[in-house]
Image 1 (spheres, rainbow, N blue to C red):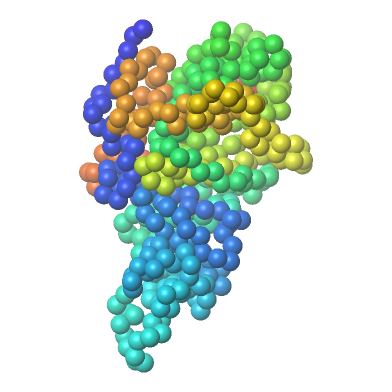
Image 2: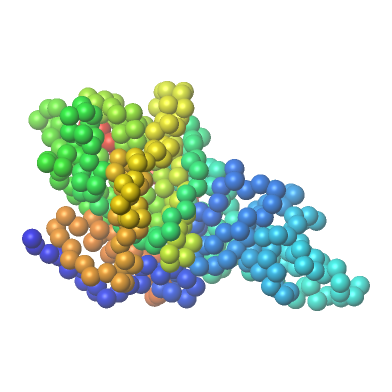
Length: 406
């Protein structure tokens, strides 16, 4: 088998480490990252870990959302147990009160007239809401951060939107992200019954794996798998996209989960399935999933819901000591068994092949963005003030189109 070497391989180790001061960590902090959902943020503070930092997310009584350092600047008590009152979050230990900007508003035990609180600042990061998700900016210039991109799946008022339950995974974020640039694993790891009559079992057939192109885009990249269409000038296409810094999008959920036949692809896809990946630290990440449906079925999400649940696993054999078994038959558990057992990128011994060209490209794109930050430049994927006024469209078409289309 021919092997391919990525230029500058030794620098790949930078991509899996995201703590403060690390190359990838400082790069990540130039973007808005998803840190929670409006639905899950209720009337008590919520502890979160983001990019290796322990933080607390809360909404004050005026509706403002704050993201503060978890430990009070006074003597380190956890603000996760604080009280939301008087325009901020009050430490349970000695009552120091911090607003969403980290300003200390009160120190109940200090002498009247003391101005000491004006000289104390809690770690704080700006938060914005978009389409049910909460995004934080943790980089420099927090008082004047770059604009939050208007992702179409979150900002478009047309159609229907549904947020799935937040998931937490106990392995490195990059193991998950680069999987999105590897369409070959769909035909092998997620193989279906070749005789079930569905488009998926035909298109992603382990005995006839579709060829694919890895294409760099303005937002990141996409992989485009193709098979001959119903006429000589058409082809069946399945696109999966990656957008910087850590967003994956696929467009075939309505065909896959509804077990549609090949003929159904004539209508084209109408559901964008977004996955916003946020590293907690080097060993875990959080996944925020959004579906945006623009088709005509008013009951689409009610029909989709059962297929999005994790299916009950089959009985584990008494002598099977493998942590993730049984895992076959569900996309999530199949991915987990492979991704969670991969060593971190800087601990692997790899040999990449021609079918890894999507993986090679996603690594190059992120490495280039990391290097841009190190040079003091604006990395790819951050819109200018002018560009931020328009919606960000990320490709994820599944269906039939004329050969050579993009």
